[in-house]
Length: 288
Image (cartoon, rainbow, N blue to C red; front, top):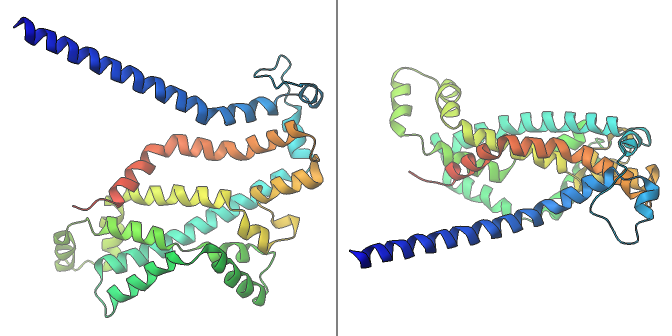
């Protein structure tokens, strides 16, 4: 008995040691990950003179200021960039959801000739480098006369092979018996999709929506290619405009203030919905 209790104590001690080491490593890793955000926020509240006078960067400031945030909205049209990004994000995400939900439902539930071959060819598009797609899209949009327009910004982003695949896998987890029972009751495919499939697969739909919002908000290469008019710049492109024609390359605190303003919406979105994102991705990749 004494030997058994000794083994238990040793096991509990080893478990506590393991958990302690694990939490210490997690804390260290968390500090490493969060430090760039802290540095960005700290720099954004430093004055230009105090920042330049620091021969050795300090991890604190005794005279914080919000003037840099005021400059972020007055030096360039940052408010306009926000509005453009909001329009681009909302419209693109809405159109994409309509496209991928219908496409995923067709591949998951409908039977038509060549479905498997079509889906295989569809998946093969994921192997094409984005740079080649950008070239083709740029030529097409330019030939259509849609440069420097919202339509030119939005059209190439209204579908995603990966999101269709993710949603299709999730749709296929819904039991076939529900579909057969709905058809016996005379329910149309669209009604079954919106009243049965989407409510059941809501976590994945929410995940796709959030990921697309983040993707649109961070979009840089395509908007930079297709727009050279400041009226259509997004926040990601606006950073370059701020650097070149706003504060200049030396005013780092003001640049950091603009980056903080642009980054906060995505940080809040991720913090609020990160559980939904993980739940939707795990469900979309799990069979049975």
